[in-house]
Length: 120
Image (cartoon, rainbow, N blue to C red; front, side, top):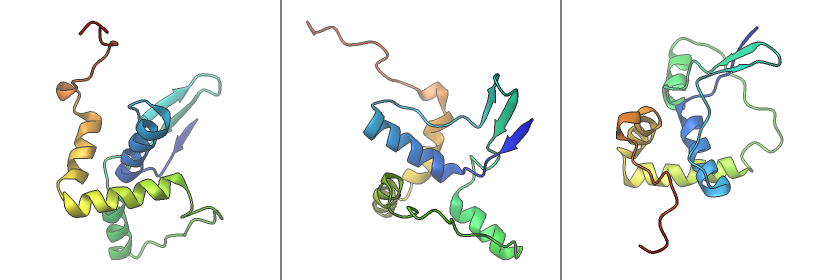
């Protein structure tokens, strides 16, 4: 009744940007979610680890990895966001850590949660 996904911090940040750009909402996936219909808990144990760190660890421990078999891999909106973020990280190296921090730093949340008064 538990399923572990391999989503990592980069996936969470990409999902945030995809949702903001294409969905008009500030959201990403939850590290843990429960589906009552199937009584299944889904966890994402790598959601605070960056893909590059996971890859380095796998290489150092000789853990085999498998490339995605999806024919659309590399030709999606997610890939476009990956490339956009790569250029942002190149120009602003601290952005990667800060984007991740922003996903769970609820004490610093400061958004317009109501529509602004049109008279303002």
